[in-house]
Length: 311
Image (tube, rainbow, N blue to C red):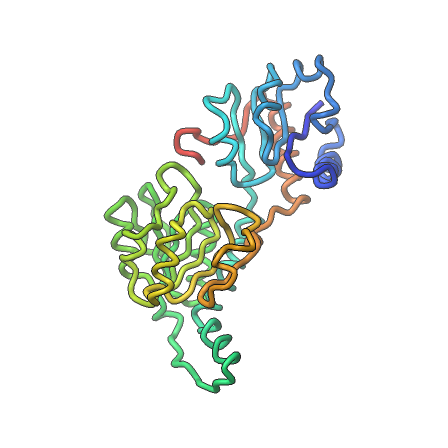
């Protein structure tokens, strides 16, 4: 028996259990609330989506949990030295979905859509100068699976792309930087900055006043990572002066974004409701099912998150 543990509403939990049960007919997936005390003592696996850490710690035999989401930083932050492994979702479909969103919103900025939207409001018929894709310098922060696939898709569409990661990486067709010095070099040469970093102690507030100031005047920003990576006050300051021309934001410190937040009314900000790369329950359930089947056969836990790095 495998519990599904989540703080989502019952309808969403039941939907996940339906998809997971269809993908692994030889397993019994149940809501955590349905477990008896004896069943809690026997569970060695749990499937989770933003779980309550207290529920996880009630499972005394738990060896590992499998998240149905790619992001697990909240779970890591809420659990101090968990006695079990945390496996996040690694879905190639998710990388393709993210790369689609990255390309779409890069084109939105590249072809001056924010400017034309403002012109329409003013009934202004002005053709802006067009820059060729190969002359538009794109910087991608984060070269994990999502960042790598997104950067490669941008290259395939003719853009000049550089990327940055914590550790040194090599990706064909992409100029790769790493470390603090490499970040400064990348920022200084970037017209459109795309953030796809995981949220860790090292990346929280990374895009603050100092680093945002390194971008060329008039650069723009896309954040499809986590809201806390950006210092909101610093970004709003840069937007107010035009140092940053536009920001496409899909993630925020508080979600849903409060109605009183100035981003809603800022004419240089596009607010999206965390939709850049939603998890698809069918493909996610199939991946979870394969990993659990392999564990049942071999006893091997899939590659787990490093709690110190946060990913």
